[in-house]
Image 1 (spheres, rainbow, N blue to C red):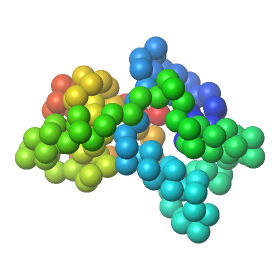
Image 2 (image 1 turned 180 degrees about the horizontal axis):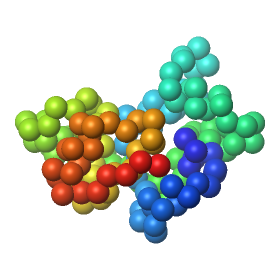
Image 3 (image 1 turned 45 degrees about the horizontal axis):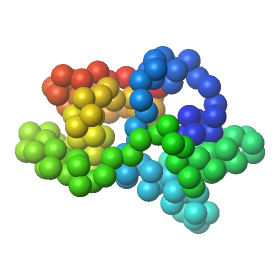
Length: 134
């Protein structure tokens, strides 16, 4: 959310280090739902409401129309990878999509510190990819 709000952070900049930025469909859906429905309260709507007014406006604009420099894979591309990974990895759907996208793209995984989880971290490592928190 901080990235979409245009809030520079050293950890996010270091994690990107010039690499392409991708998000998952489920995270994007949850963010869009948080923007569209003020009655839904959850972790993303909480993050959104905690932002200053200018940063909240920027985040909403970025969620309503995902910036061109943020990639989003089709489930058509990653469901086969996810289904194969699910045979050996015990992950929830959000984590499985993140791992499937990373494996498909041969990309590292960066998650917000508050979303750090042992199972995803171990699965990313088992796939031979890098995992970091931002």
